[in-house]
Length: 126
Image (cartoon, rainbow, N blue to C red):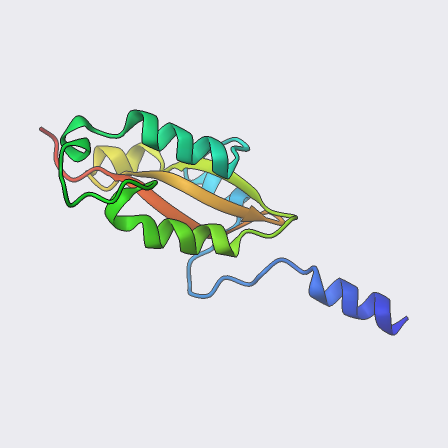
């Protein structure tokens, strides 16, 4: 019985670390879209294949996935567990209309978004 109790506690969804509700159900109700799963290898190959030309010609640009922010990508990968799903996300339409849209990758665990890596930020209307 103790092992079962421990196992149940161990596999409980993580509580949000701040006041934000990180459940996929809540985010989806706010208009967020999730697609996937996608593998780490797919993400890295896609980025290296589709990175902007301006970044490819910079001599100081690290030639690894996500270039200057590769450290953040490596942190996200390190948080992945065998039970997790790596997905793409996009914030809701209202956030894009208000110049606050975000797109990127997220780790989903037991129905909660436990970490995200923002790739695109909408900053202007032009």
